[in-house]
Image (cartoon, rainbow, N blue to C red; front, side, top):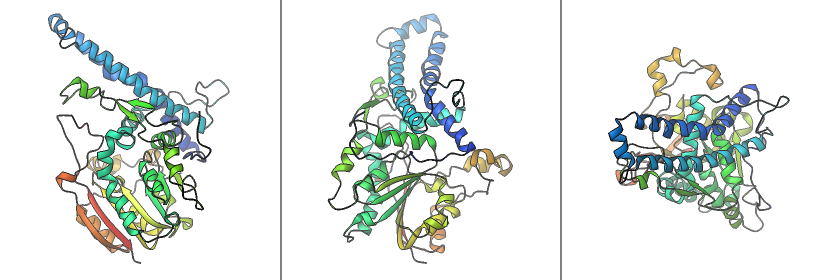
Length: 404
């Protein structure tokens, strides 16, 4: 594989304990099984249901102008293209962690570890490349990342060397916001706990040879609210930009290269950034579609406060789709799951935007600006623009400064 002399590897120095190895193996296995599972659930079952129709009906629908069986063949082709991406991600993960693709008697066995939740994460991770790394996802990125990118540039407009400004991006996902901030000259550290996201971001950031190298079919498996099969089967090219080339162009003579200014950590945000070595070391923290992943939002606020320097800024943009809502409705006894979370259940709470901002203001920050996007600026999330169903978020965008 041809690469520039400088490169960045976001997962090269991860050290795993036994529990993390189990999670890693399940992640790798989910990408390995992507092709088989997608064909089974998306097209195989639909063929079974199709042939269960009265023969006169399925014969009519298999002929033009419907040609439903041909549609399923096209969907199978799209699944194979997406599965090729999953295979490349898997290859990157195996190389990173020195694992054999086909485990033998004397090698680590990781096949068969994925649960249904892991398979769902692999599927959603593949689709997320549409949002973060295709030209067609630019509108979603503009609505989500644009406000915080503007905040950071405004905050440090008079700083002569932006490379001296350390910016933390919790919930870095597939790495697009980290890449954008680094390209603007900042020293950026992404943080992510999901191995699906970490391995996939490592692949897209460091292992693609050129822009638009792969074709992704983000909506091929969606059969509801479809206006035309052309909409359903539309492909997009990823990545929209070759990362290594773009970062090399952003280099300023006499200063740290972009590859030295971009890093990624694989850990729980609150555990890693509340430790002593990370106290007050960042000039900015940027959270996008992240705050509502908190089991305990107070812990998130405490962690941001701990790792920011006095006078540092926190820029946030995102919804409050609290991820722990369903568990709260089940009751605490059903979510006291140390095996899945890695630590005992702490309890959780869902707050309104006003309540979150009051908390932030009472915990050592001054909220300098706030607002909720109007409908015209609302953000979709991996939203098919041609679907009959359009979901969007009027995100909460605010800026807070650490004052104590």
